[in-house]
Length: 276
Image (cartoon, rainbow, N blue to C red; front, side, top):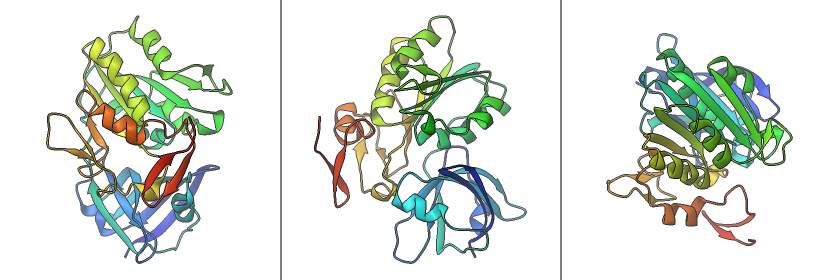
């Protein structure tokens, strides 16, 4: 049985579910995700695991309703049953006391960032967080993230919330006066490439998670494959998590890099750029 036992609307497009399922008995680590299938023969939707309670067999997840598939899931109510829950998938995000950690969440990546931030906070790290989005509507979970951050910086493309600027500029401003020991970033391929440029310059370890806007087009099971240079891993096969120093950026940017900035025409399970 995979039954929703509680639902809470966090914001207009963000919903938290508590689901009773035997998946809660699995060892789900920070940064991993599960696939929720609403009905038979439908796509599994990857969602962030906020916490688990194995004793009560409850898993808590967050759903960001940014496309058709996620909206369908978010419209379910307490008492609804899901056809299936599978997982966990993906590699865990390393959690230890690194010292000062710079955490970056862009758009839908903010949802996935929260459980990682919480674990890093519990581990005793000093946390500087950047939340980035196109507009203020994309800055979500602000109160929850502020509670586990020592410093919170908000930036938007249009200046409607926090500072008007880019992740690149903000990272530069932060790294000059601070000794950063680790960077964790959740966002598009473009965001990850910017993070990689800064972390390699300052020789800082970086762990990143690729976040895509179209859930139904990246179930995490091989629809998209981007090789990781120097390893046997592949993004969206082994999971969305990887060391930011080693991905094939030419390939990744070609496939995913302008997901937020450029409109796309969807054909099957791939995307074709129709504007530059």
